[in-house]
Image (cartoon, rainbow, N blue to C red; front, side):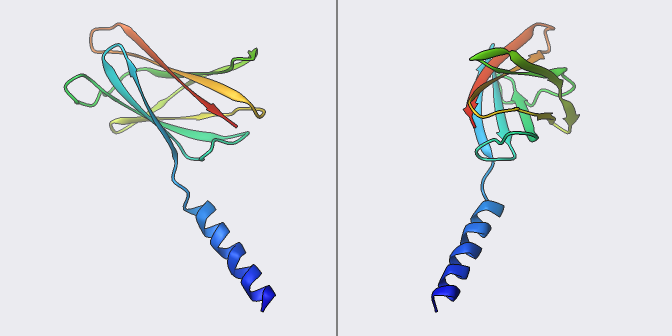
Length: 126
């Protein structure tokens, strides 16, 4: 009986991991609302797919922007990388690859319709 209960607990845990909600956050950048989701929650060492959605002050999606993600470990600034996001409909996707546990900061930068570069930063811990 103990084996059956142990097996059931393991299955429930695995189901929770498989269906875990993505890491989500929102930031503002120069009057634009930026929604960010990462496919792992919490983010992991290695590959994490980031999806970014940018909306202007009226709520209209920003399309055809050049979106970059600058990822850095604040306590070790030499550990950084810039990734260009790929447009996918009204969203943008990129893969970031934190290389170790600790606090990471990601700055999302993009050009608005007026040509000005906007930036907003979020942080996460592995």
